[in-house]
Image: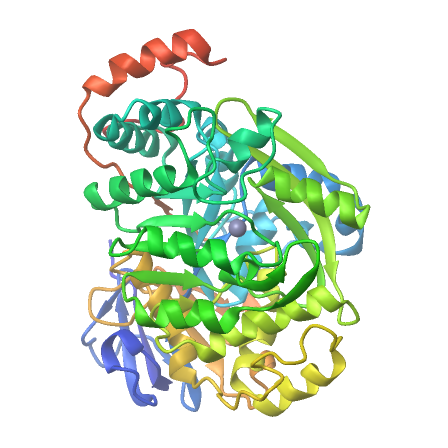
Length: 545
Ligand SMILES: [Zn+2]
């Protein structure tokens, strides 16, 4: 087979993993057979990138794009389908069948792949998949073109794990975690409201703190967090536990967030959508920003990484395994909702939502996210997300980038929002910081790739996957980042002159950690006793291949 080659010539290259965060130097980026190479023959095909900005393809560390909860969300939003038809793109690839679809906050599978790629993103992580529903999530990712994708596997409210914790069986809990990751074809362990979902499903109240008992007094959110953080680190997973803390969205929850970080002190852990967990004030009484206290802790603890989960004004769909919080949102907003119990494993709640500038809490949430970004000392540990579609669609990333890069624009936006709860925040007091292009390259590709342990992603060094995005260097950063001129995925030119032209199949990212096979005998007994599927029929992915 002939080698596919491309020289991206003369662009200003931002590659913080390899250039130490330099301001961008002019150099060629050479591609051969889907990888970055040091040089190419002079007659190799050339893409003229003079005057343009070149970065690795974007990497989304936390997004909701596939699986049963996402699909329930699609079902809940018929008006979105009519409002945002997505015609089939004009593909030039004779092997690809162009697909139409619909957009909105939860686009259809094909449209999700096309729109991510057209935004310059080439990798995305689906952040919450119940193992029991992994089969459907894989099927949907099979229909999501272009992007490489992995699934985070939900653990921490599952009956088998909680039994092991109650019995003090940490080693068996670890073996089980390894087995279930393989069985679900997962990439990382995701914990959502540890213990809280299980307790709420059992007819009780959600937990409110780290030491509330979950069934047995030996099982608490703290024990669940410790057990799974230790398991992920002992299994040497490429990404540590990915934690959605207790008390999401509640005034005063920063106390719980900081307690959780302290509980895991010294252990590698990733805290997701930190914005939703950084509120001061008192539950049911008052709200204020606690972004400063939370980010100062993150700044001082190198074992901690986070993604922000920025809220953007406009439509969103809140969608989470944290069913009790969705019940509260449904009850307080009067909006329609869906609740699903995933039998022995987890829950799910969905409420379509809209963040409005006139609303006091939404304005506070918007400000808290920006404070986290602007007060973060290390862009390698505080990365960009909107928790798509919870805080806003991934299509709002370009506007978020503009907010980070352009203080005068940010200050104009700040004047328009409801001031009631924002007054007195660090943002209202004036934060002068403006992100550089190199910092944007860090928080949108280099750092998420590194935090995920994806060695071939997020950078343009020799041997990296040839995932490259070429932007016109426009002073309007929202415009620049919303319509890249060229996008290359695995060496294939998928976006040419701003048009999606090819749609190769993306790869699945997954792990298969080793474990003591003895756990499967015990698991089989448990499946026979309690589960609605047989042990043999449960795995969605081949084990040990
Ligand atoms: Zn999420």
